[in-house]
Image (tube, rainbow, N blue to C red; front, side, top):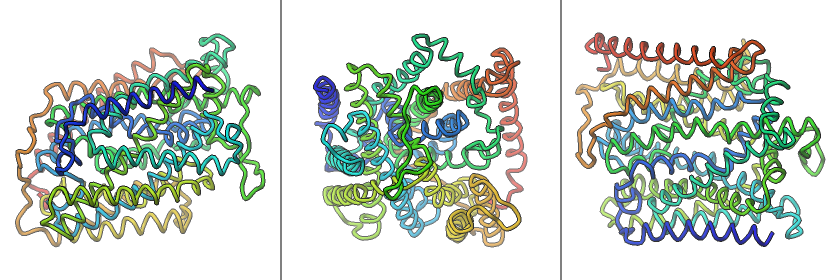
Length: 589
């Protein structure tokens, strides 16, 4: 245990030292320096920061827990992220950087006015404080608590150890974000990202070796031969966590919000040197998300096989002091790590997980500070505030947010599914926000009224149908992901109808502020098509025509992948020609 603590402290201190050396000459009293890293981030820092801000304990613990329950089907959250990062690179980033915006609500202000900026800023603050940061702290607390065996080490109950770890993570993560600014966050993300990738990919390798009793090949054989349906990612199996239609009606739409319009994620792309660097970072992050399936889904499936064979102990959940009949799948991942990881690597793994948790948490705190300082304080309360005063306000609210999240996080333990709960809470606001931003991009004549009506309708519709009616529409019971797609369709129909009858007199024209060079990356499209091909290949392999079928083969999967990518290419060409031919016919244009 002493060696574990020493290696943990060494790596954590090393990351902090490098982050300090890289940022000590930054002027953190200036708005651009503190909130946007002086618009100086290169592609590899952007990619590393995007990857690690997303890959944290709530991902490792939550997604692997869902994989333990339902199999590879849950990889849709990870794999489709690659497609939505392509959309970020080519649809959203050129517009954001051309406008020189500092936040997503700032972009909405340019399109729909200051009131829309203020409203959306408050919605983002709610989303980050209630639907994101507490989950990061809770998942991090139970993961590190299991790895360090905090209960036995300090003689604490499960509840006490959770509070202890939540407070520790919250305080340290808050200090990083509040006193280091975005560049400190991004630099530490990049370093920790390398460690997380190494350790995260090591766990399934060691898990397969343990499952195969010393043979990785035998471990793979067990995965394919025994319960092969758990490797089926398509969602066509009965009782799938994500039905196949839910991938299109919900998962991709939610990921479009998350990767393309979520302030906590997009902020580091706004801090790029130029558009080309930002696009490179987004596309490399997409590649990392495909690779991430191996560390965010596969360990959960391995843990299930080990549990079935009596080789891994997973306790039952305790609700109101009573042992329930539901397995506590949320600790399946940390339990697997403790089982297969050599003791001499535990310190490094804990440091990597600690860094991943801090990355997500301090990124959220930095985003909250940016929203409150720039979109509310400087935009609404004190437009003449100096940079120093604005940064100070951001730090004060960063501290307040940290304390709130520490107080809320431990109560998440009452949820049946950590990851699904987080997604459903976020779905109340994420689709409405995404729909309004999408409207602003595709329609030059959409008035602010359309956005306001859409926001109110979208939030009311999803909250009522999911949380009140429990996904029962009266004539049919649907999956909650269907409600996501239905909500988007209804919102766009309502907003475009308002646009048709009450269009802007003068079409909106985006102004190039020239704050950032918006020359696109010349190899961007080639990289995007390769990323799309890899996505199709992975899904083909983990489908009934691939390794999950008795007659499936790798060659069939490859052939299907090639045909799918060619189809996607041809479809994109058809859409492009259609848009050109109808450009003058659309009322919003």
